[in-house]
Image (tube, rainbow, N blue to C red; front, side, top):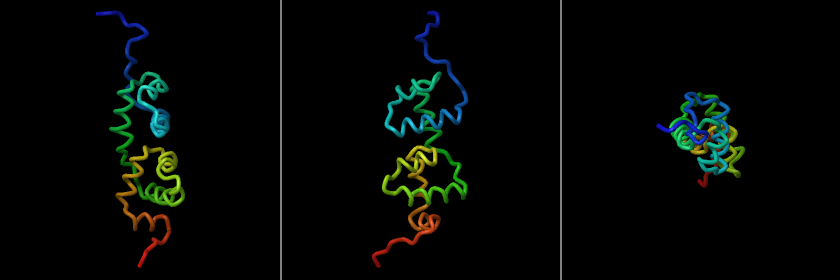
Length: 121
């Protein structure tokens, strides 16, 4: 078996820190590739970054009532800039914020934001 060199794969780390989560969400939100993201996260491979993002960060289920209300208010506030600002403020990938938006639906979003829906009728 060949000796370990500086070119060996990074040592596996078990637990991801909140700082790593925030950084990976930020960098991926800017369109950065997994190889480049892993270079900013010592000890993490591009594959581990991608899997952590897809299997954990995009699927967070920590949506209590306060968090849902915050999402509704942020949507109304940042609608012109759309999902990029919402994802950054909530510290979640844009797909997670978008998914919760659709789960709540148009009427519930308006109610939680304290606004009246526009209607053509």
